[in-house]
Image (cartoon, rainbow over all chains, first blue to last red; front, side, top):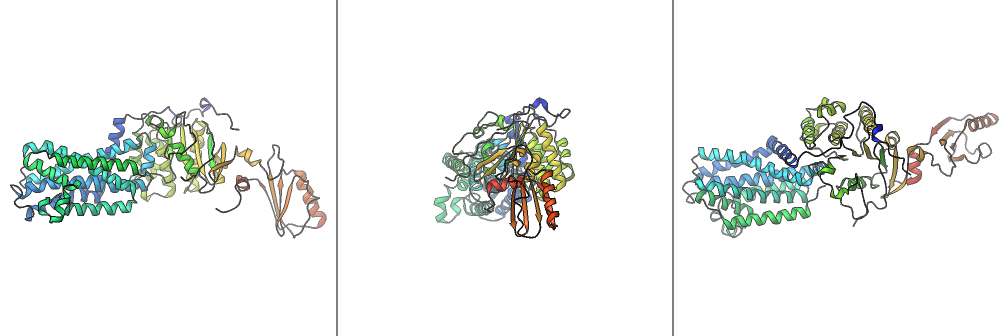
Length: 268
Length: 295
C-alpha cells in the first residue's frame, strides 16, 4: 500500500520559495496580451519573416508603380497597387509567417508545453491572433507611409471598411495557416505556405486584379481568399465601398478553415 | 483504437517523489500525458488535485508544473526572456532571477535554446516547470542528458521541493534515478503497472527467497567449474552456476554464511579468481519482474 502522505506543515524550515503557494493564474487579459507580445516580437526578430512581411511587399509595391500592369484600373498605378499590397501583407503575416512559426512550435513541443501552463490552448490561439494583428498594424503603417510618399491618394471614407476587411482577411488567412501548420510536418508547412504565397501573390487576384489575369483564372480568383481580399480592399480604398460578397467569401473561408483546424489540428 | 496504456492504477501523494519506472515504450509518457490533460483518454478515471485533468482550466493548470521529455522550448528563444514570459502567466511566480541562479541558468542566459547542451536544456525546462511554484510537478525523464554535476544539482532541488511539500511524479528508465529519488515506485511494463512499493519494499522482493526485513544480497565469485555448494549454504540461499565457473549466491546473507563458504574454500584448496558482494539493486528487481527480453 501507499505510505501515508507527508504533511506539508512538516516541510523543510526556512525554505519559502520552493513551497507551493496555492498558485493562481494571471488574468486572462494579461496572459493573452503577454503571449501576443512575445510572439509578435519573435516574428519581428526573425529576419526571414521580416523580409516576407515588409521587404517583399514594399518591393512589389515599387514594382507595380514602375510597370504598366495596373494601368487604367484607377486614377493612378499607386492607388490600385497599395490596397493589393496591404492584402499581400495580411497573407504574409497571418498565413505564411504565422503558419511556419506554429508548425515549428508544434515540432519542438512548444505548443504542448504552453498548453500545460495557465495560457492553455485557447490563450495560445488568442495570442497568435493578437500577434498577427500587431504585426499587421506595423505593416499597414509602413506600407501606407511609403504609398503616401509615392503619391497614394486613398478615398478618405475607405479606411473604415478597408481596415475591417483587412482584419477579416487576416482572420481567414490565420485559420488557413493554423490548418496547414497543425496537420502536416513543419517542412511541408514551410513549402506549402511559401509556395502558395508566391502563387496567390502572382496569380491569386491579390495584387493584380482578376481582369488582368488569364481568362481561366478570372472565374476562380474571386472565390479565393486572396482574390476576395484584394478585391475588397481595392473597392474600399478606390471607391469607399464595402464589398459585401467579398466579405462573405472571407468569412466563409474563416469559418470553414477554422472548423477544419479545430477538427484536425494535431498538438503533438 | 490503440491501447497503449490499459490497467495502470496509481496514486501520487504530496510531499513525495513517485516514480514510474519502465523500459522505453512501456507507457510511462502516455500515462503522464493523460494525467496532464495533454492526451484524451478513452476510458478510466484520473483525479488531479481533485479535478479531471481532461477538463482542466487555467486555475488547475496554474497549480501544476510540467516538464516534457522533449523540453517544449522554442529554439530561437533566450533563457531569461523566455522564463520571464512564462512567469508572467502566473499571479505569484517564483522570482526568475532566483530560480535561474539556483539552476545555474544565469551562466548561459544569453545563448539561444537551440545552442544549449542537453543538460542546459533540461535545467531550463525544469525551471520553466517550476515558475508557477506548483503543488504537483510532472517530470518526464528528468535526468536525460544531464552531466553528473547537473544531475546532482537537479536531484538536490527535486529532493528539496519534495521536502517542502510538493507532489512530484517522474518517469525514468534509469533504476539509479528511482533508487536515489523515489519514495514510491511503480514499475510499468506493457502499459500496466506490474509492481509497486517503496524502493526498500521492492528490493526485498527476491526470487523465491523468503526475506523478512533484511536486505537481499548477491555474492558472485569465479572459481573452477562444477563445484557443489549445496551442503555449504542453507537452502534459503539460492545458488547457481550461471556460466561454467561463475557462481552466484542470492539471499539474506549473514556473516555466518560467508564464514562457512570461505572455510569450505580453505578446506578444499579453492582460491576464487574474483568475488563480489552486492546489495540487490532495483535493476535486478526490474529484470525479474519485466523479464530480460529486449523489446
